[in-house]
Image 1: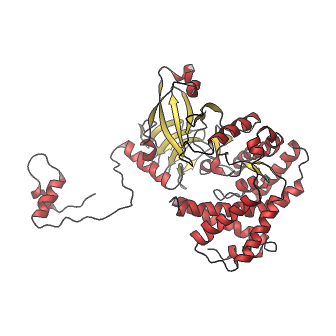
Image 2: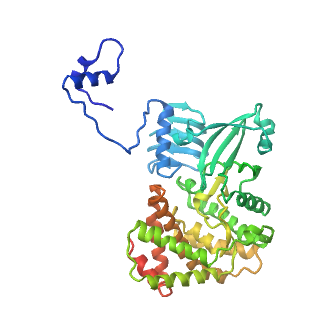
Image 3: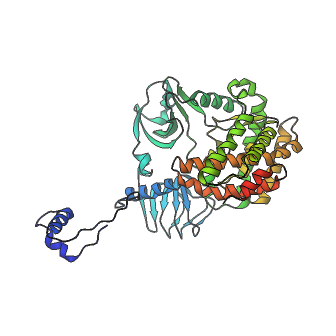
Length: 472
């Protein structure tokens, strides 16, 4: 943007010219041409529908979201996938389906819409690639479908040709990249790992084991172990976290959480009973040392790192950490996901699936239950949470022999303490070290949960209670 005095016109040469010509001429004539430094700010020329969409979606990515629904918008039960923005004053009729859509203020929408900007009296179609954040759009590429890795695309639905379009959809650790590969009506997710990625083989092994025992994970469609690549079923882009950003009746929310908890029942029950079939998982214990690493991580990255707080009595605090780790490691282990929170649950056609499970270990099941029902990403109503805990217990009793409900309840509070310290440590690291400042918005809820838990357990962990009660 620029603000000009009318005097600028006399510095423009005749014929075609550029504003820069006038700036140079005016400066030489003694006039001041001033600028403002906006280094570090986000700028985008939104002169086309595609560049406007990129600016909106870039903003979503900067705040760590894929969807937005204004508090003044009205929406019935709708199906959403990909990126979705519903601006103020909009009304979206129940039963509508939106995928990669931006709905402008005051617009009424019904029916199915994909890859478009919708206004009160217009609909602007865009391509799949144009409805992506600019960082993802910049990493689009063509993928050759020759070879066994892509044999799944040999189906007639893929159409003819040996080249497919691939768009970046996510980043993982160890230089891991996830691309959506589309050919005809078929779509799959390509995972590309760095040569030294320690999780590649584990990811494939766990996928086969979990899928074989009814845990709803993405199906493995092909693998190129030499190239550290794998092709997976495409579960879409809608996480439970994003699904919860839209208005839903409480009974519909609770019903979906039932289905999420049923995943844990299979994981903690059937998969655990057969874990000897997967030796890398059976031997991967979440033991005392790992639990102590989590509390040290909390102390370093959150307490003294992010919050710059002083520890009054380190010896007493270490004793509490020692006792907590000893307690949690003494509980009966099962197969756990270890990061079973709403951003790792994908919702496809109303059915939840689990991703990012390569960190699975043998540990107390209550750690997973704490992760999803006391999730800082989404605050559940306390009475609903109580019903959901009861639902999990009843389902475990029904499907798993020798499940001890009383023993499980005794494990919940220590596991919640452990889990929320891990989460706060992660938020400190991701925001301060990795520069992902949007994780800071989850700190207040995680800290509130930890304060409640340390207050409830203050007789067992007095130094921890004193530390946490003083954190702000």
